[in-house]
Amino acid sequence: MTELKTRASSINRALDQIGDKWCILIIQEVFWGINSFGGMLEAIGVSRGVLSNRLKWLQSMGCLRRHPTGGNARHPVYHLTRKSIDLYHTALMAVVWEEHYHPPPPKGRVQLLHRSCGHSPVPTLRCSTCRRDVRGQDVSYHPGPGATRDVRDKKVRRRSSLSVDDVPSERSVYRNLIGLVGDRWTANVIALAFHGLQRFDEFHRELPVATNILSDRMQFLVRQGVFATRPYQQRPVRHLYELTDKGWDLFPYFLTLLQWGDKWCDRGAGRPLCLTHELCGESLHGEVVCNHCGEELRAHHVDFSIGPMQA
Ligand SMILES: [Zn+2]
Ligand SMILES: [Zn+2]
Image 1 (cartoon, rainbow, N blue to C red):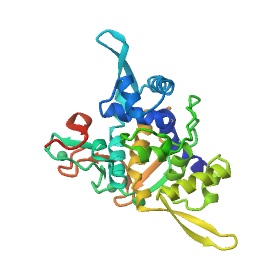
Image 2: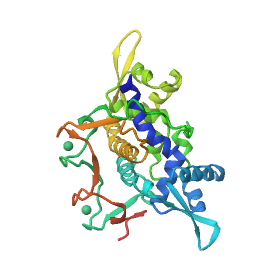
Image 3: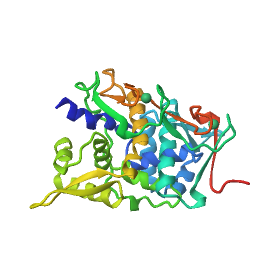
Image 4: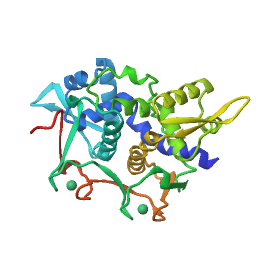
């Protein structure tokens, strides 16, 4: 039972703090330099009321800091904090996935330049021990010290169940990814699939959600190409939900988010979940590195722009 609860709770403590899809979009925009109220309003295509509410939430979670500009409190800008800067690797993994599976139009492309080596990196997730690329298939799980004591934070933002089509901005860099991780149940289903769950009733046993809602999310993930279905029983027909390559490739995003939660959302009990990298047998710590020089990518060593590459 502990393990069952832990599988879902470990990713949820990060998701509880980041909030819903609007919060994820806001943090993303600040990463790419959009940090005024008006700028976000335009970039995200969100209503004023929702934006103002989510900005307050992110400040209360210590993920954004508000600064008046030039002494004019009516036009504040929002800055990342140490806590949210630590989501940089997560943001990079989101860009890699989105660009691979849903290449944005040129005006929406994030261009990166690693100043340390002068190359445009493809950010890559590696095991910090054996330096090999991390794939979700090579990871095993067992309950950590915080497994039995994980109590849900009372300050939980109710997550919106809007579909991806409700994110209106064409420019949103991770439009498709947000549709998958910005919904609580969908994010939980994906996280559980990394643990090897494949049957509807296995997912249902772990998640306190109504059958019709879970069924809706599973179908959504099939339509998005995250799951492929295969019948394992006739009369009545039942299907296995198997992760596709597109689904497995979400693992780096989830791992960096999980590591962020371990670092910033720990309430003293320690990690609820321990991961082992089966290729080296060591406790897994993933780091996002430049594929050219192998150095870890840090926000202040990487220049970026959004739009076509300048010649
Ligand atoms: Zn390793
Ligand atoms: Zn480099």
